[in-house]
Amino acid sequence: MQSRLIRSLDELPQSARGSIVAIGNFDGVHRGHRALVAELLRVAKDHAAPSMIFTFDPPPLRLLRPGPWPQPLTWMERRVELLTQLGVDYVVAYPTSVGLLELDAESFFRTILIDELGVSGMVEGPNFRFGKNRGGDVDLLQHLCAQHGLAFSIVEPQRIDGDWISSSSIREAIEAGHIEQANQALGEPYRIQGTVITGAGRGRTIGFPTANLGNIPVLIPAHGVYAGRIIRANRNGEPSFPNALLKAPAAIHIGPNPTFGENCDKVEIHVIGHSADLYDASLEIEITHRIRSVKKFASKDELLEQIHADLRSVTLALSE
Figure (cartoon, helix red, strand yellow):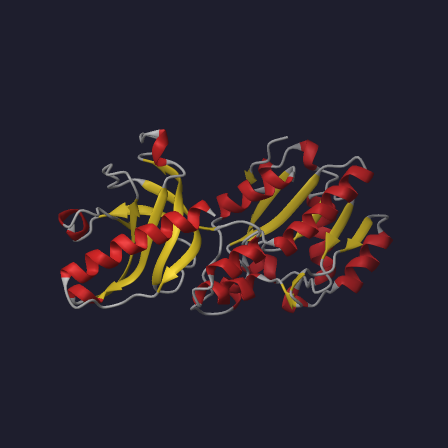
């Protein structure tokens, strides 16, 4: 079954009722989330029931607390894609409202899970909280499930080298430029998405055209030069670029250009071996390795020498 993003319970197909459900943000769909999904699918199979992820859009924190808020690791459609790949049948992004957040834990359970979804079971982590002021915990959830004859399972958090995997720890790694560490916890390379906007055009004049990416909805890694690949490229919703562009190696520069006296942060992508005009294209890029920090060079020739070295490093990193 191919799951799709369901944004209103009015859109929920009858076949989704009776699902085994896991509730959470699932930001990043990291290895901890994947362990929970694996248990969700196991319980669903045992009960011959569909599987469902129930999340919220926007995250409740955005209504409960004034900004700034943490930048997400994934945009919602990407979360659906990842959860679908794992085998989840239905993904609901429930519209968060003040009224929803005012429901106490038992009212939320009864109104949303029983009346609206008709769930046949729940799978959660041990730190799960629900209802107004996060008043409900897994003990209450287990009690309510037992009252209604529903399946219930708890999945322990996952660790790497003794450290818990969480969206916040992955966010910290990305903000520090530790992209390989973040990717290990995610289970696959981190992705950003955005639209190619007008830049200074300087890269093309020195033989290394770059696409400047704007309107990025997720967390941008720390300043530096990174290795990555173009995963998707389309313009006006149509894949109007050569197939060779996809999975092509790319050098990604994040931050200012101090050599040219520019202090504004930018995300610039040079696709190795391609010079296609990407202006106004929507790009999806995976970031695999950090190559170096941002530096100021004494001359254009010194910069060009470093660019050549960077491209060799990117090619080598992506060939591993």
